[in-house]
Length: 281
Image: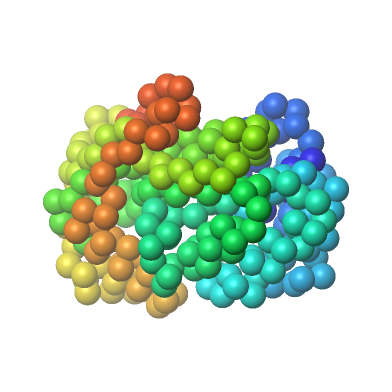
């Protein structure tokens, strides 16, 4: 039995779908079990990182797919406590989705979870994916649909976009073949680093209408998110800081680990856009 947390997110839902496609025994941990049960028809248990009384959802599970909800910053008193409970209940493999650079950055909430896992037995696997291609169909979607543009403060930087479907495939391998992946930390990126102008050109060619990249100023982008996109102020700031980091090459390095683990070439941005083009119609 595999407990899947974060099943409503991009990576979590992709992991869940791949596990179910292989007819593997799955239990979904969700804050609102009734809505998830209707969607997937799988076993569901109430689970909330903010409510330790729900942590026994891991009972009877051999593996856990662990994903930090964006709203949780204090992982020491939530995810880390759950890790102890899960181990006490007999969980022998935890696959945690972290972020690139978390190992050396104590400010990132994922850092504390990585440290916690490393302090115990090596019955874990840590995935550090880079910048998701799914941002094109999520964070940038409204601007593309309404204004035929990608508006971010990334300058002329390059990004090695990774498809969450590939991340999920690695996660499923680590969940189902733990002996091979125990104690491993994988940095995962896509197979090529593209500028946002090249991403816009891919959208143009696939959708059959012009889509342009418009470099934004830092303050202009934050204002755009907060006023026009109506995002909460904190989320607007975080998203702006994330994209400013791209200017300094934080996501441009292509790592070959993903291709090695998959045994094939990872999906490209063009693959993602082609497979999901209805998102921008």
